[in-house]
Image (tube, rainbow, N blue to C red; front, side, top):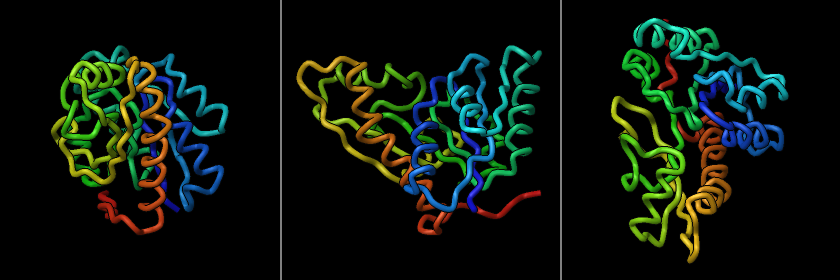
Length: 205
């Protein structure tokens, strides 16, 4: 059984997609052992509660400095003993210590076809605003391993989505979620859970 911890900052639509995919059997051999948010009012925490999943908030506001926040974040992950950490709209720069500890065991979903519209400052609606401003005809989403850079880790899976005449950032965001994000993130987790995609599974104590 693959133990996953899901880190979220907002509404948790990708978290819901994972919950639904586990429920329907699209993702097999997997359990969500903890949801971690950095925002107390994140709706993702409500989703976790409604589905009987243990959740914890680690807010930067509760700590005197970045280092103590980082330590608390790592502790929140460690306590859950996950095999895989899934970043599903988590707007926190992960501490390097955590990236090293969970090397190739952290995946992220990004709402563009990396290397387009990614890196510092590209998150949420900003990604779709940039894609529309550039006039691209195709966008999409990417699942990738997390390394020390921003959106620079090895790409696992990508799915293209058409940009249509008259799209607003909000309309495009919804289409990318429905046609790409909610498809490839559950697919990736299922492949990892069933040994089709190997991750750094060695536990470091």
